[in-house]
Image 1 (tube, helix red, strand yellow):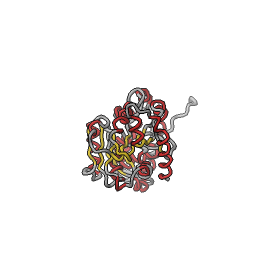
Image 2 (cartoon, one colour):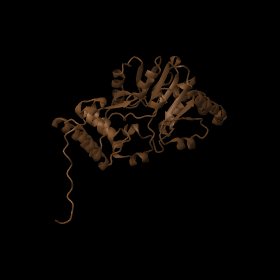
Image 3 (tube, helix red, strand yellow):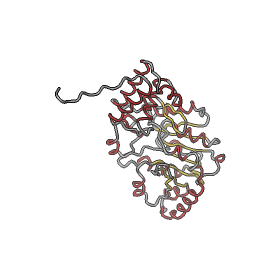
Image 4 (cartoon, one colour):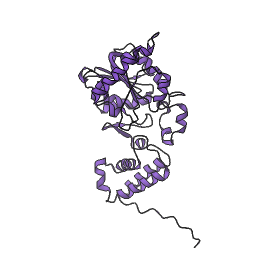
Length: 330
């Protein structure tokens, strides 16, 4: 013997539990990134196993100690190979993502749904608005898969929802999701850049957007999985603010006096503060403390974008609204 230890072969993969343990080890070994709707390898492995076996999550424990068929094991291991070697995101492998307890179809035509809006739409955002039955017009800008438009339509049952995107391919996916949730009569899709084609339409009680906001240089540093998503759904110019700049201008003339614009901006809070130091933004609280969703009241936005007006004259009013909004949200 030369003193070198032989590699230990993997144990037989007979049961669902064997497959899960193997997948968790392989994902950690490969260093896959879990930032596309999953918190870690365990969630992704369970999702892939459920897809390979045709089982819902709640039924998976029944296979943990039970042998699985060779065909199912082969399907699972091929999914795992594509996840670890090709770095295809799990949501694309299984063709679906879940948000707010709802299933949405996804594929490479759309960014994978993941948004802090799922926390904020039920209670926090409505606290800034009139009662839900009085919310009649809502817009979701840069809708992608249409998931947020669906969540808005369900939260505000009297509202008509306009959802925009510049990508024809994304709008095809959004249309399928809207139909699957029985909301074709209430959600209208618009192919347009930001809100351009919505100009001149009746004004909105609420406009939300989870727009592209990554700076160009950041995209180059993102893990390989993120490069499988449509780049136009991630990147917005050199500083990440290009779409947000347009959205501020276009939303200002599209809100009712009591309305609000709510934008998810990722890591751009400081960049926005530097760019627009006098813009009153209330950063809404999120469970992980990132607080990267900003709410701007219609009056503050109108004053900020009005030619010849100094936005700083609205600072005190904006601060008072923030205090009232937090109190109503508790």
